[in-house]
Length: 406
Image (cartoon, rainbow, N blue to C red; front, top):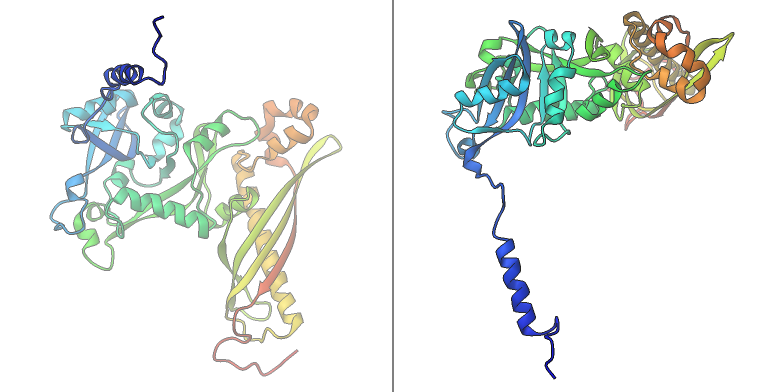
């Protein structure tokens, strides 16, 4: 009787291997690296009723640090068109390579585009299958996005990586800045009861010289791009800017502060001491009084003494508690001023509306259509539990001996 070959037989294995070899002959849509231009930063400006798209592209031949600095490590291309997609395609008239968008780290909007609305330009970046939705977004003030894309930054071989890392590092250790990913922005744009923000920055110094290699050939920079705080949106449109202090308030209330420092007036003198915040947690507590909404902010803060100019010793408990109280009241003022500034713009960037939606859904259904107007006049109470934990390795101000121990 004739036997059928089993799956274990050499003949069967050879047939399977032959079929697999024919099927797995290579990538169906492969593209060579020397045919692509890797885009790292995208700048979007409004110009003459159109969009001007500027891209910063890495130059692979200049990536080695052993090469001379006679040529930039990046190239910048710009084109105008009525849509973002068209502008990207028109860039190929200037570049020998097609733009590859999978590695975008930063998208920069100028003020005019942000005030007009960013949904339209973001549509292409979300829709295109090549673009990864993990990039950060920034708004420029007083300068064009094209100028920032063309800017030469220190410390990093690629200027785009310098801009990206500066934003990431400052968010972790400096409360006014907030690195916002495109996914976070789009989530807030689809919700009612919370408005989005983006970090804003501007070029300080000579813009023209900042776009040349001379900007990194000396210790002191001719020009710098600096992040200052957060910009406030209502929907997808920019409505205003928060200064450094008010931006701190936003990051405290939304629990984006992991570490930061701040100076406080000494209780018994005009000198300052500096606290380093090591832990921050703010709870938003909504309530309804006489059918009107109210918010209570319960903040729990732990900090260390980082620097002291106070002419008193810290071994006295009363002095230490007075400094703790001064730090508490300083933070209370920061939070209160930040909330008032956002209320004056009619933009609930803190998500107070979301808190009411969760706790009081029935009342929220009556308020949501007119929430920004209600938010403008809503009372906000601030409660702070502030603890100074450590004062460092020395008790007194360095080089001084207090004459009085209270």
